[in-house]
Length: 121
Image 1 (cartoon, rainbow, N blue to C red):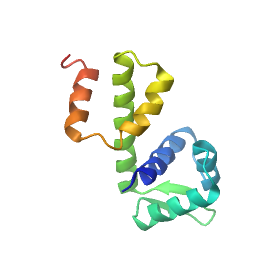
Image 2 (tube, rainbow, N blue to C red):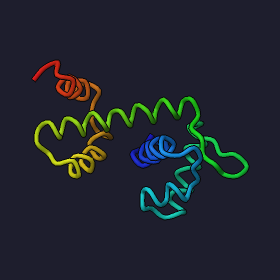
Image 3 (tube, rainbow, N blue to C red):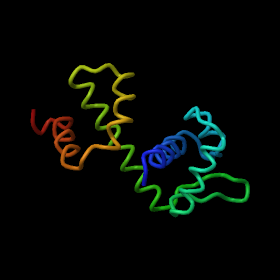
Image 4 (cartoon, one colour):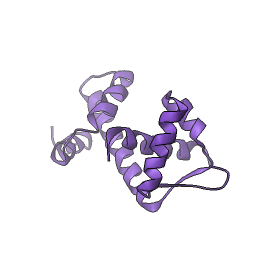
């Protein structure tokens, strides 16, 4: 899955935590993207069985989609916390974490997580 699809999935996860029902326009507004871009991304997520849409076009995560989105979200939160621990301000940490999370290896994530959870420094 590419970076943009991961971002759509994570956005859906975040929006679902804030409200019960979401539509494509909510993603457009949250991510500040065009409707055609979001529509194409959602179509790919559907094709990969990560989301479904009902007759009213409300978006839901499938079980697989929920698992992937939750993992992406937690990864991002761990990176944000790590960056803040080393002195990066919250706004910059959030921006940087969104970029880093897509290229970070599992090994590096585990080491960062250990630091965040005070297991080693």
